[in-house]
Image: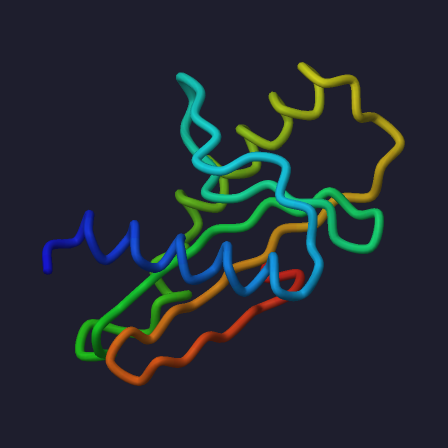
Length: 114
């Protein structure tokens, strides 16, 4: 399985997990010229920008470690753009990371990851 396939599978697993929790998913794979956010959701009246990272194993590090400073900056810029474009000024926001461990069939939802 190539990295794109792993990413798509991870996003599918994360979306199902969120839907099963009753979360309203607003956008998936929201893309701009600045960058992309995997999932934008409404969780308990908060606008949540979610980065999904899937790994087969941790040989090259934990999935959340791939959300480095540069990636966080890009996600933050996309979030600002989304908020401005949709006039969502007075809504609390947060940034989460969902780690998917494919070989272990395990998911870790990191709330307020950054």
